[in-house]
Image: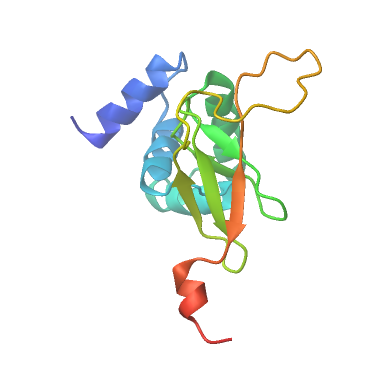
Length: 142
């Protein structure tokens, strides 16, 4: 299956109308997980020069709303987007360069973390961000 067909199928499956811009954003997300809207815009505009930054933001908002993409917000960093959804994974973020890596939930069942007090909430998911220094930054002289 071609990439364009796969991205069109993902968009349709999410209940959204397929457009060239949306397909380009899905393709860029597939190639660059944990990308910001600005990073995705650079990727998309290289393929579709007529695309605006606003159209990328609109597509991302639609994707998050439809459950096709996930938005993560590491403290002090821009919002990042990924296509890996509904599996309760977490993230490692390098505090020096900002590199982000996925980390599977150790316990397995969603949610893998339970709050000490639920305050009556029905917990559906847990998001954990682990901060540290990636191997490249650790190996780099200060």
